[in-house]
Image (tube, rainbow, N blue to C red; front, side):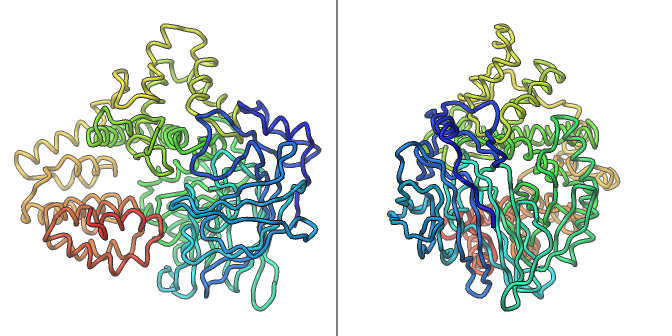
Length: 637
C-alpha cells in the first residue's frame, strides 16, 4: 500500500490559511493534488467536528476485511495529515466505530480520546499526534453502521450470495471510515479490501486490477482515487456481481441475472458522456462505470466517482427513465468536480446537476422531451413552495438554521428551483454566453469546494461584468437568499403538455380517456396526465383507469408509484396487495416514504395497513429510508 509524505511548509501555509480557493489545485513533486480549505463563515461545516484550518486529512488509505457473518468491516485507516505550524492534534468524525489503537507510521502508540456522541453527528475522535503527520487507526465498524447495508441472499436477485452496499451521503461514511467527514475537506484515497470468495468488490475508485488470493478462501481487491473528492463519495459494494462493457470508458456491474436488462437500459451511456463533454468540457475521472444494485438501495442514484450507484427501479425496458443516468453523470462536473463546501449550499450540487441533466436530455433526445421534463420539475417546485409557504426560509436556495442540516432541504427547491434559476439565467443572457461561463466555472474550481457567495461572485465577475441592467434583470440575490419564486422565473412552455392537459380536462368532464393516445405518449406525458386527474375518484373509476391504461402492469416504476399513491389516497382496496408487494421489494425512499405517509393519513383504514406492512419490510430497508419512514409510521406523524 502506498502512503504519502507530508507536503512542504509552503503548501501547508497556503492551504490551511486559504480564505478563498486557489486557482489551481496544488501538486508538489508529483504528489497527488491537495484541495484548498475555505475558511469564510459561510463555508464552515457545523455537522463535522473537524477543524481543518488547524489540521486536515489529505489522504485516506484503507486496509479492510468484510465480515458478512458479523456484518462489519475491520482493519486500518492510515491518514495523511496537513497541519498548521505547531498543531499537535487532529479531530476526526466517527459514528459508532470501535477503535482498537492509533499509532504513527512507525507503530508507536498515539494518545487519543473519543468524545461524547451527539445524535446525528457521532463522536469526535481527537488524536494527539505531536509532530507526526501520518496516523494509523485500527478499528471495526459498530453494529448497524448506518452507511452499510448487509443483505442476505434472499434479498438479492440471484438468491445465492450475500451482498453489501454503502451509502455515505451526506454524513454516514463516518460509520465505517474514521476521517473528516465534511464535503469541504476533499481527500484522495486508496483501499485494499478482502472479501470471501466468490464475491466481487467494487469501489468508487479506479481498480488496481484482478483480485489476488488472500487467506482462508478470501480475495483482495485494490482501488485508488488520485483526485481529491468529498469523503461522502467513497463507496463500496460487494456481492455476486459481473461486468459488461458499454463502450471504451464505460460499463455496468450488476448481478448476473440482471445484466442483460441493465446493459440494454444503459446502452446510451457513451453518447451521454460525449454529449456532456460537448456541453461543458472534458470528463476528468477516467472511467464512467455504473453498478445496478439490489432494490433496497435508498436513492435513485448516487454519483460516486467512476462508479455510479443505481437503483434497479429506473429499468423500464424503454430507456424512458434514463434521465436518472444523465443526472448522475452530470454530477461528474457539478458536485464531484465542484462541491458545496457544506450542506447549506446543497443546491450548488443538485440544482446545477438538474440543469445539466436537462441539457444532456435535450442533446440526445430532443427539445420536446427536455421541455416536458422541465415542466414536470417546475410543477414539483411550485407544489413544494405552495406546501411550505412562499415566505418560508426552506424555499430559499441557500439554507440557514435548521434547514441547513445535511438533509434539511427539499428536492422541489434544491433540485428544481436550483435548476430553474440556471434556466432563467440562460434565457436572459443567452445560451452561448451562459454555457461558456458555466464551463469556465467548472474549470476554475475543479476539485475544490464552493459556496453560494462564490458562485454569485463568479457570475458577476465573469458573466455580468459590471452590466447594471443585466444584474437587475437576473435578480441573483433574490434567487439564492430569499424564499419563494422570483418574478423573473422562466416558466415552462404551455405547449409542452397541451395535448395531455386537454385530455385531462376532457377526462374531468366525461371520465373517459383515449387508450390509443395514452399508448403513444412519453413517460413524461403519462406522468403529467396522472398528476392532473381528480384527487378524489370512486372505486369504479379507478378500476376503469387501471383497466384502460394498464397501470398495475406498468414496467415504469415512476408511473406505478403515482398510480399506487392515487389509489391509496382513495382507499382503493384492490391496490393494497400491489402496494404491499411494491413496498416489500423496493427500498427507494422517494417511493417508500410517500406511500407509507399516504397510508398513515388514511387514519383507521390506512394506518393498520401501514403498520402491518412496515413490520414486515423495515428490516429490508437501508437506514436512509428507515430514518424517514420511522417518523411517519412508528411515530404516527
